[in-house]
Each structure stands twice: as C-alpha cells, then as structure tokens.
Image 1 (cartoon, one colour):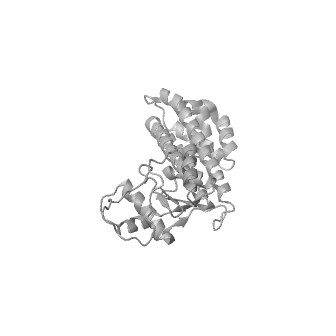
Image 2 (cartoon, rainbow, N blue to C red):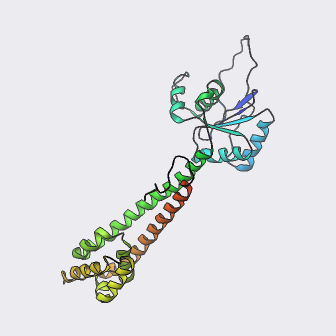
Image 3 (tube, rainbow, N blue to C red):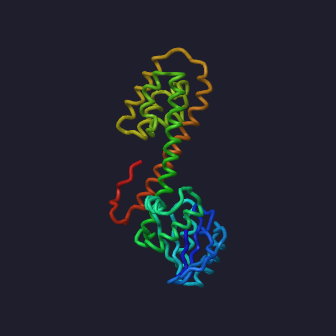
Length: 288
C-alpha cells in the first residue's frame, strides 16, 4: 500500500504490509534540480491496527491532502482502506495487471516489497490515470466476495457429507442407496435419514410414518418415494457388518447436511439483499 501526502513526500506503504519506503541510492555529487526534492515523511512498518493507522494518517495530513493507494483491496489492504475512508482521505486502487506492466519499465528484476512499494508510489505520481477509484461498488464487491467465499466452503462441506452418506449406504445396502443417493440433498430424504437412521430404522418406521415424513417435504413425490424405499429394503435380506454403526452415524450425517444446506440458503438470501439496488445487477441472479 502507498500513501501520498501533498507534494512534499510520500509514504511508500508496504507491499503486503512489510516495507514502507524504497530508498534509491544516495548521490553525493551535487546535481541541478528543477523542482523541489521529494522525501519520505514516514519510514517505518505500517501498523495493522486502527488506532495506529489513524495516527499515521493524521501525521501525514499535516503535510497536505492524503491519497492512499493499494494494490490489494481485500485481505491485507482492507483495514487501511477502511480506516483511510473513515478519516476522510481519498483511496485509490492500482490493478495488479497495471502494476506488473509498469514494473517492467523500472530497472531491476528482483521482486521485493520495497521495490513494489516504490513503483506504486511513483506510478501514482507520474501516471495517475492508471489508478482506479475505490468507491461504494468496490466495497459491495468486497462484501460479496466474503459471502461467496463462505458459500464455496459450505458447498465443499455439503459435497463431502453427501459422499459420506452415499458411501455408507452403498456399503451396507446398495439397493437403498440407488433410491436415496441421487436425491440425497432433498429435504424429504434427509428427513427420513435424520429421523429413522439406516435400513433397520427405516424398516421399523413402517410405510405410514415414512409416507408422512416424505410428503411433508415432498407433497407430490412423497408417497412414491416411500414406496420405492420399502421396495429397496425388501431387495436385501442379509445384514452387512457395520450396519449397526451406520444406524448411529447416518442420522448425525443427515442432520449435519441439513444444517449446511440451510446455511447456504441463508447466504443466498443475504447475497440477494446485497445485490438489490446495485447498478447493472438485476435481482434474482444468485444461484446456489
């Protein structure tokens, strides 16, 4: 991140919050200058703390207007950007592709935090048109990325649990898995598994209770699903080792899967609410 303060100097903030300034080689030979020499106002590690960040920005503001420039809007650049905006300072973003292209114009091939910080600051000074304004749309995008990232984690967890349930059913009762497996995320199937357990518990529940559980979450296919389950149970008369443990594990797995799917549904609703009113984004585009 880079912070520019007026025309007197620049704080070359850390590329990934490590180095604040890149000092070019000192020249002892006097040289003619046509403009005032620029110098670094602050030369120390930029803190990742709100109070300390405010102190740094306040100190820089004494020298003129402050422009905070980041090359990462999220993750490590999120707190400095938020604090800078709260302090009333301008914030800009140097896209990564632009940063890489500009870096090729500077001497040296070694990628260091100090070099990157200097390039960001110098680019802001000499090529301000390369900067992007950080506005409300960017903030909304950052919020969405957090939600979508969490939804990706939930999707992976749902897949893992689904595979575990199907694997257990395949091991102890393949015929039952062929009926329930393809519909494993359906609320009716999860209700049956969470309430009844495995093959033994489902058989003990009986047709009447199975039909009631299924039709509660699937009015159209509930009765047919219950019938298919009972037919599948009759297709196997032996008990495979491990079935007793599966009767304990399956309800827990089904309950966990129901909870994960409910969280995904809640996240989808949150995303929809965030998308409403955003320019160029019609409502109802979120799909889980």
